[in-house]
Image (cartoon, rainbow, N blue to C red; front, side):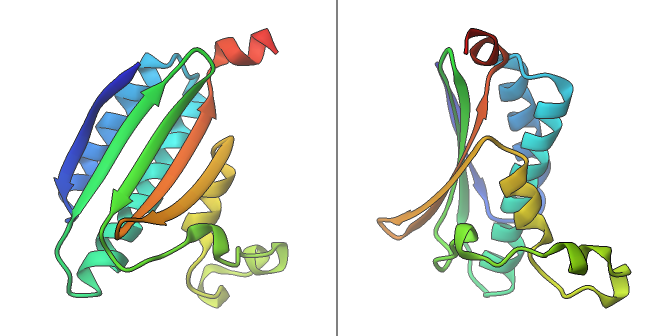
Length: 147
């Protein structure tokens, strides 16, 4: 089952619409509160990075494309943009030592991508046809029971 995709301007006002879309998809997939929260957090972190770093800080305009696909086993959310290529799977994540530092002493960057990568069951990235595409997959509860 595919939910109609979103195509929104790459601006901060679009983030709340994206959040509601993900919550609705998670609800339709029957995700429990914890899994739904982690998925929404992951999408929010990634979409915010697209809007702020990919478009605003780069003085670019563009759109954010979000789609949701579901089958009996998984819910998949894809986020696409036309900003400069950025591969979140190639980013160095904060280590335990950095995470134990007080906020003001931590290096900037990486925490949002870490939360996104750790909050889903599968995290992939591809760059094709001038678009960044990040694909997040969460196992549905029925799939976990069947395994």
